[in-house]
Length: 70
Image 1 (cartoon, rainbow, N blue to C red):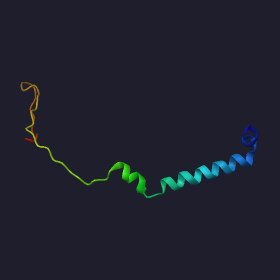
Image 2 (spheres, one colour):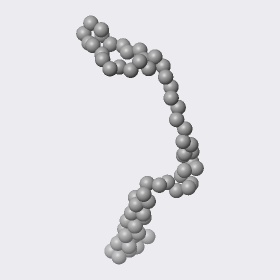
Image 3 (cartoon, helix red, strand yellow):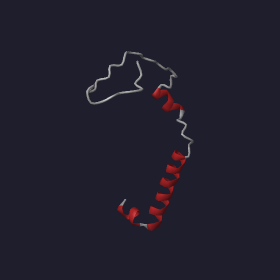
Image 4 (cartoon, one colour):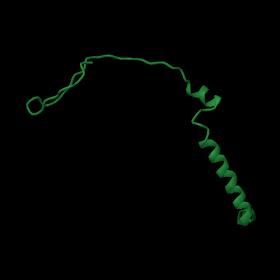
């Protein structure tokens, strides 16, 4: 193995193969493969939680405007 890595052409070919693999991964348009989407569970769900917002600040020194109620 040490003899292989000392050969200049073997290192160049190995580097080229790794570069091609990296390019293929980056240029995949950001779309996960089918296996990755199964693991992530791409369920399109949204949840809205509303609570009263309690803002704590020093009322003697500061004024808060534009804070939402919930």
